[in-house]
Image (cartoon, rainbow, N blue to C red; front, side, top):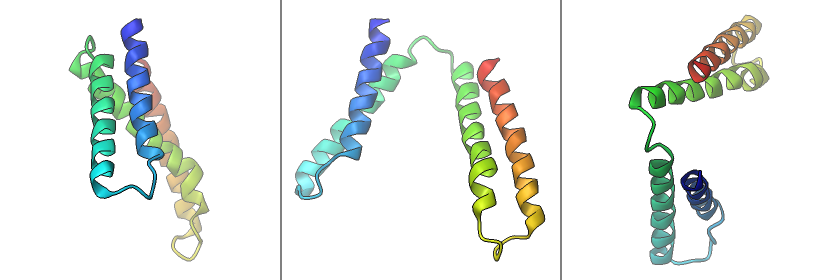
Length: 110
């Protein structure tokens, strides 16, 4: 339990370092900050997934990626301007998005 909390803190710190770096710093300091952030994220992920089998990890990661694509197809894709696509394509991509979201829920939960 403590290791998971440490891993989550490391990942959060790494993401925070990447998102909030100062625009006025020189290249050497920026390289050090980004390298530390990547190391924190890598170590946090490594600690978090020590006891997880690779098949389970791959299935869950595939489910998360499919879910993100499905949510984009449901929410983001219909907002594309009608000049670039026909109206029937919006319904098709919404349907495919629903299929992706249901498939991702199955992959994540099972």
